[in-house]
Structure formats: C-alpha cells, structure tokens
Image (cartoon, rainbow, N blue to C red):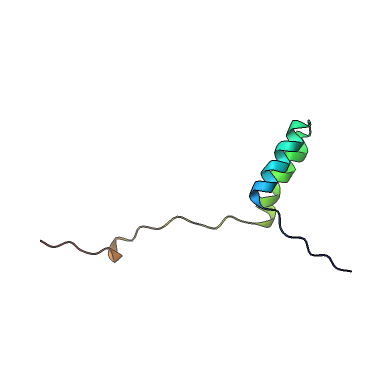
Length: 59
C-alpha cells in the first residue's frame, strides 16, 4: 500500500525546528531547517534590470 505525504511547508518546518530547539534538541532543529537545501532550491525571484527594454522619454 502506497501512501502519499504532502511536502511540509516552510512555516511548518520552522515551527517544528522551534519545538525541537525549545526541548533541548538543537541538532535535530538544525537538521530540520537544513532539509530544504537538500531537497529544494529557492527560485531566483529578483527582477533583472535591462536598460534596453525601458521606454525612452522625449520632450
């Protein structure tokens, strides 16, 4: 029997890490926060400035 588990959101992952850290399990908390870097890379969200595409102002 296969089970499907929904990926844990960033918010849930942070809250889990806080819970473990408060319980004295700092190493486990760090592991939970580092899982994102192994599985998911954050997409590039910055907009690149391209001067050639800007409209030219004329008076």
